[in-house]
Amino acid sequence: MHRPGSNTDDMQPGDFLCDFCERPWDGLASMVEGHHGSLICGKCLTIAYRALVMDQGECVGPGLTCTLCTEERQQAEWQSPVRAEAVVCERCVRQAAQALSKDPESGWTRPV
Ligand SMILES: [Zn+2]
Ligand SMILES: [Zn+2]
Image (cartoon, rainbow, N blue to C red):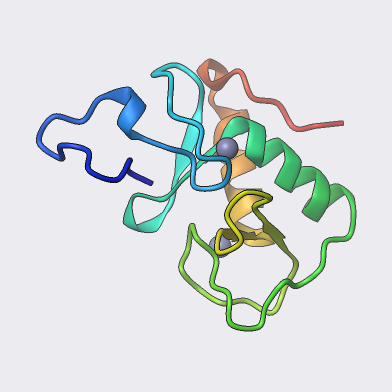
């Protein structure tokens, strides 16, 4: 997400925040973008991947839509520990993990 009050004509790396931990982007670490400027950082992706893909996650809903794809899915979701409204579905976690692990510059690897 974008930092509230940031100048949209002159966005700095620190104006981009992870929707799930609210950490500002340092301009280097890998982030995956979803709909409407939503972002998930590599650290949150690792936690979400562990929870949903390696462990059996559970559906958090009803009524909560995935922050990245904006859809409500009947499948496991991971909920942000700092923003209760921020959830990510298993499908988006898998897609983001695939995108980052294919990009050698991301430095992100699937947790084992
Ligand atoms: Zn994060
Ligand atoms: Zn999703």
